[in-house]
Image (cartoon, rainbow over the protein chains, first blue to last red):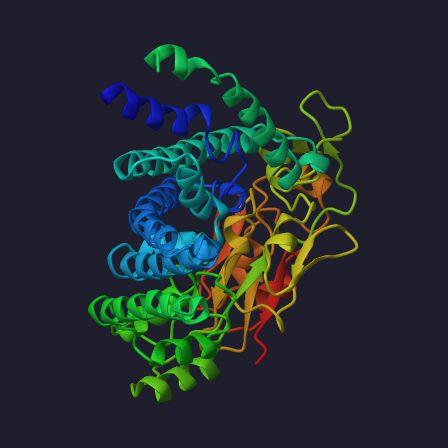
Length: 197
Length: 272
């Protein structure tokens, strides 16, 4: 039982990392990863939104299935996620103003972040139970956080290394993102063997 | 039930619940913002230069709402101070007029060389040049002339003249002071307008003395003490072979300018 949850969690963090393996939620990954503080803040915010979103969307999905309205999935989920992000934005503005300012436009952009909607839909497609879905959501969020933190470190090193002028800025960022993604490809298969599920 | 009604009702219900939660949350989590803040930010020049001592114009605006003085904005000057005062309902107070000045007229023939005395071909930046320990032949205290300060000026007030020496345009300079921290040779300083519209100012930092100084640059201060002797109010002192004029005491008689054999002392004229 525990092994199953652990397997879901770690496979979401490492093997199926939303950013570096599935390439979801790239926009804040590239936009807010310049500084470690805001990268970690963004990762924590997205984690919170994903878990809350799944906590709400999973019951809604059961409702949709019961009433035969599965085609409403996308619009209903987007509505819920938008509300949650708005709520989170108010909370951050009230309690952590510096984080609010450093996240800037990327905070409302979590609304249309495909990592959040992707987590909500993918956990349902996988046929997870409610607790499993929540653990998967937590894993997806932590994976996002991990990718953000690792990549902000990578970017700092890359900037200090003073790349040639033609690579400076976005080009070298995309190249280093690709190489970081290659590193994460190495995790595939590890978790299955580790937990024997 | 008709699926269309069910669909609309469901989405409307989700929206309604979300809206109620958001309304309640926005009341509970409201952040009080003084409505004068955007007004004050709009009055400020928006250069974010930091001459007021606060992080950016918005930082200064917030500080003013908490009671900071309204006359600290260098680029804005008296005009902005007056507007801020009427907006906040306080006294404007005296505004200090400041401007940056480059204390070098430059040796026209100076050559930038590397430590092993080859021609300098590194990055065209004064700070890189200086940090790497390179030197300029002739005067080692003067303007390097790559224009780091030109790039740093948010108002485009600094330009390089025909000698590749940075010159501040007094009509555009707002006295924000961003350039003063850029210059690796600390040649740029902020001067405050005192009682006189015109004061004498030494445009040289060279510590070389006598013949060596003369060889290095035609405009250098030789450290000859002539200005010190002619000054009627004794506000000039020569230290490390460079003359210093106390602008507070200077009566702008111009005697030192005439006495200087090298043309290192120049009038600093204040424009409105």
